[in-house]
Length: 102
Figure (tube, one colour):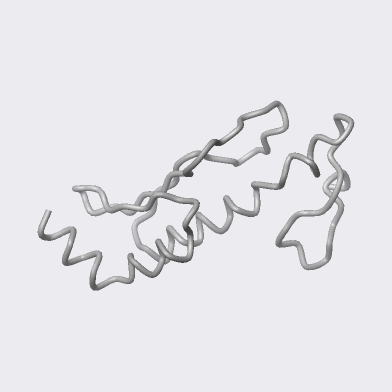
């Protein structure tokens, strides 16, 4: 426990937690970084390929990359499920590629 507290204080864990408040982030006893979605997560038939409830990584930087990728996959249901078709754009897609074109 003391090693985990020392590691979290020195590697920026509090800052990453502050940037990703919708995720519970921790370090396992094996020293891996983990994050799981918080709140009322609705799984539907519109769940996208690659979406995960929990992700892990060897470093905090890699974990933050995983979280950002997962956030990109969390397109609001209003965009995905309107009339049963995928519509709208991906949140981080700078070119605004329509989802139904993917």
